[in-house]
Image 1 (spheres, rainbow, N blue to C red):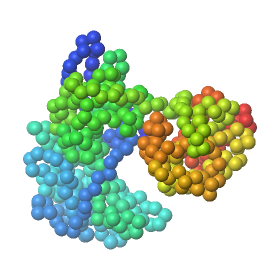
Image 2 (image 1 turned 45 degrees about the horizontal axis):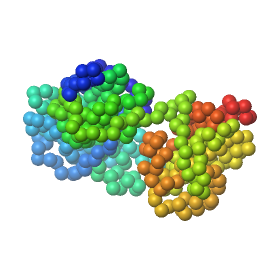
Image 3 (image 1 turned 120 degrees about the horizontal axis):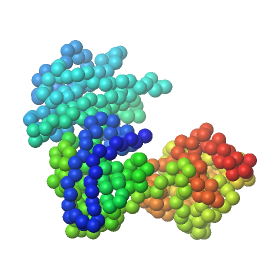
Image 4 (image 1 turned 90 degrees about the vertical axis):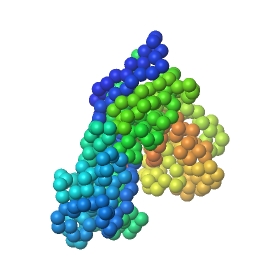
Length: 410
């Protein structure tokens, strides 16, 4: 996702004054925060045919209603009831008790749009804005919602489930010494209470305009070190609009920025042992070539579906200067299984495998938290030539050919 944050408040930690604490105030992002974080955690509530006793009034003309109550905290006895009405042969309708008064006949219509696939299965997507109340304050925040087709045979465990996620946050700017960081305070579990242990503070440590998790995510319940000093968060308000950052008596390792691995940037170099026990220096060992660093695993379905195309590209362009270095994220004790797949699939390039799974050393260095992931690199300069979707499917061969032409190999 594209991230865009407009910083509004600055927190000044002046080393010369060495403050032991400072106050923080952040602005509410009431909706579309998911486009800033670039991710969300799907949360579940189960739908029931039984109407809750606390639901006082229904909307008119319900045909096949399923009921639930969102577990979102709010004072004043507010309960956010939900109805998904799914009449046979007609479009579904989502109703949300956005003001939490037990009356579903006085709320604004919600967004609930169908997305139908080639098999005729429908996923419904939308959401609603709910009014949270606490300490004499009210804030209106959006919850995204979606529901898979209850007849989908591959998702029968979700046939009675409505999924939802927070689409709100708090934003601001953190200044430490002479460095300024964009920050976002995120209520990950959509509890409506920023004092819980599940709230994260995202910090754009490398100032690349986005938040790279988990490296740039800090738990507000634990000490953290930014700029060489360990801090803790105290006196968090219910809605996250104010809290204090105090110097901690504990010492933790400084949170270092993730590498900026955008196209045009220089790839992070490393030395590792390949599966034959030989040292491989990346990208130095690939001078004069274009090399693709490929993060994959035998257990990863999408990774394995990319293998035939990668094998074909390697066979076609290897003599022209194209190489591949694989980084396996397979689990411990799987070396023989990895070797078998390499042989069976014709993956004749070098592989690095340390059995670390998601904590594989190179994956940690590169902050890789999803696979397949790949970087096309100039072996001489270390420049990143392509990445992401341009190295998958039908786009791969074209990206390799373009890189080789740029290097004068074609």
